[in-house]
Amino acid sequence: MPEEINLIQPAPVVRDKYGMYEHPELSDFDEGDGEKCKAWIAQQSLQLVMVHLETDAPEEIADRYFQSDEPHCGYWEPGKPEGEGWFCLAIHDTHDGPVCWWGRRVVTP
Image 1 (cartoon, rainbow, N blue to C red):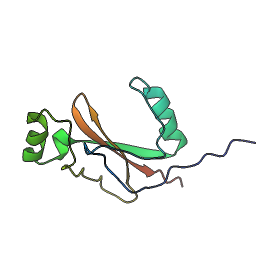
Image 2 (cartoon, one colour):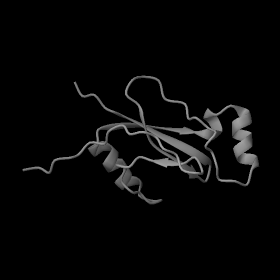
Image 3 (cartoon, rainbow, N blue to C red):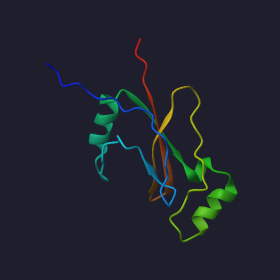
Image 4 (cartoon, rainbow, N blue to C red):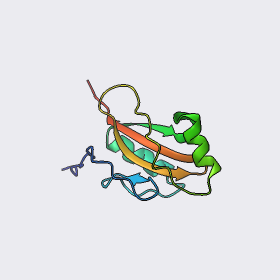
């Protein structure tokens, strides 16, 4: 009998003192875990969209982040992709600045 998979569900977004967030049910991935992450996303039947502060935020918000020495982005409200069912999986810092991961369940016909 196959193991039952608990599908991740939307949760309240509670950001830390730096404006970062990780969904409480999100698996822990390290840098370089790309294949493991892709497998988890497929197993969860999720569509994933990454929104980057640099290209999503108004110029003054992007400038505020990139011109400061603080790893804080709590003033950025990441844009939600178009369509229904999106929920936030994570807001985290990368080499290119903060990124928000949006996910939604893939509807199979």
